[in-house]
Structures are given as structure tokens and as C-alpha cells.
Amino acid sequence: MAEAQGESREAAFLRETADAWYSSIDDWTYVKDSRLARRVGVRGYYLRIAPPDERGEPAKHDDHLQFWYQGPRIKRKFPPAAIVSPDALAYVRFGLRAPDDPRVVATAKVIDAITKVETPFGPAWHRYNHDGYGEKSDGSPFDGQHGYGRAWPLLAGERAHFELAAGRRDEAVRLMRAMERFAGDGGLIPEQVWDTYDIPEHDLYFGRPSGSAMPLVWAHAEYIKLRRSLRDGRVFDRPPQTVRRYLVDGIESPHVLWRPEHRRRAMPAGKVLRVELPEPAVIRWGAGGRDVPTRDSGLGVHYADLPTAGLAPGDAVRFTIAWAGPGWLTRKAAYAITPSVVRIGEGAHHQETEGGRRPAAAGAGADGAARVR
Image (cartoon, rainbow, N blue to C red):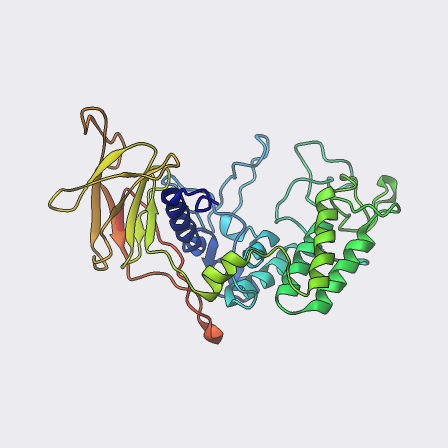
């Protein structure tokens, strides 16, 4: 869009940012060898979300944390590595992963083990484990604070799109029929269906609409899109641009991003460290104190690319941020990490290659000083 408007500078920055984000997907949301992975019998899987640690790095461990989206009265803690959601299969729908990618196949297995419910009317899925938005265990209404998330017909439609992308049209049709059977007497699809034993006194019956919103227009939209996709024989809203760029052409980003709110501890060898800031600055880095001024992206982000691609594993990238003002270098970085160091690692974290899949690198770590792995 920016390119079409003649904004080539902005277009180049946006494209490079998209590539860097794509190459960071595994770093942000893929976890291996967790307790849940061992329990389900997979090497790894995509989790729902990795909360940031004190440096903005994704926390993907088995230690228990309290999540920011929990209500103030809810004190339960959960291990971020154990929280999964059908959302992860959207990587396929967005054209960022192939449906037969081994990591995606394993993720679907974990999602089904944790969030899938088989009802008398067909399968449905919870949004994620420990979802608290739904009726209480006794069937009484959600009070804004306490409850248990129930099964969502919408997610049967999203799963049907995944199955269609994987070439399993019959399964996609079966899930579409389940969505239809989840509808109430008036043909309206509810937000949630009751996912356990009947409680007649609350008018709750296994697989039938719960006390949630009905209709959920989002669910009806998904049903219509699924109808269209089945007619076309493909997921009609899967962006062809991302499929071409990442799955066919195998584009990988040469950059690893560092920002004040995401201070990487590590980065893969062979990558360029891009420092992104909210205002102009000069980055002084290396033993010789080389200065690299930032460039204006035209989008409120100023960035500098440090030529780190030639550094070896074990090297450290040390840098100091000096903010540029009217007198140039008017004030130094006020961060607790000065100089910043990024450790260099062994190399880019690539996609699984089983079945001849083309490698697609994932991102790296974070810190004020980044280590090359």
C-alpha cells in the first residue's frame, strides 16, 4: 500500500519489519521439551502467548506466573509454556506456516489434547486452558470475575479452515455441520456451547447453547467464510502475498530487532542487529567506539543497523545509545544497561526440515548487550 502511494522509504521499512517478525515467530511462541510436550508426546508446539519478562523477552518456561489479563481478584498462577490455544493454527491461515509443517502438526495434537471437547453434536474447542469467561461450574452465570470458559462453535469453523488447507475436505465439511448443529432453535450460532453434563435447572445441556451471547456475529461470519472456502476448494482469505514470500520463496530476515522495551540477550550468528528507537540517536558500538547514526523510517521509528553479521559465536555486541538533539549527543541513554551487550549464538534457528520442508529461521534472544549464539 505504501509502495502504491510512492512512499518507497516507508514501504521498505515495513517489508523489512514484516520479515523480521516472521523470522521471530518461533522465538516468540514456539516451546520445546516442556512438561506439556513430554506429556503429549511431541517435541514442541506453538503456545498461546509468551508474556514478557523484565527485559521484554518471551517467557516460555514451566514456572508459574500470574498473567496480566487475569482479574485483580484472581490470584492463580500458570506456567506460560502450558497455555495453548487454537489461535496458533492461524499461522497456517495467514500464510506463515504450511499445514504439514511438523511444528504445526504437533501443535494441533497438543491443542486437541488440551482444549478439544467432543459433544453429542460434534467437536468444539475452548479458547485456551484456564479461560475464565463462562458460567461457573454449578451452571450459574458468569459474574465478571469467576467462571470457566466453555466451548466455542466459532473455533470449529476455524479448525475446519485448517483441515481444508491440509487437504482434508471431508473433515472440514463435518466441522461445518457441527457448527450448524450448535445453533439454537432459531438457527442462531451462540458464542459458547455447554461443554459438560446437563444442568436442567439452568437450561444447560451438553452441546447446546450456553447462557452466552446469541447470535455471535463473528461465528456467523466464520460460517459464511467456511461455506465460501469449501465452494472454492481452498481457504479463500489466506493471503497469497505471505504464502508466496515465506512459504514458496523462503524469504528470511537478515535482521534481529532490539528495542528499549525488548532488550535481547542473544542473537543468532550471521544476523544484523537493528536497534529501533522512538527518536533520533547515535549508536556507539564495538571496541573502537564506532558511531552509527539512526535513520528515520518515516513512521515514528528511528533505526540503526549494526554490522554484526561477521561476528562469531561467543562474541558480544556492546553499544551505547546517545540521543541526538539540537547540539548532537545532548544526552546519553538513561537505561540501566549501558553499554548494552548482545551475545552472538551459533546461527539462525531454522524450521524443522522433516519431509524436505524448506528451512525458515526463527528469531533469537534479547538484552541490552546481545550475545551471538
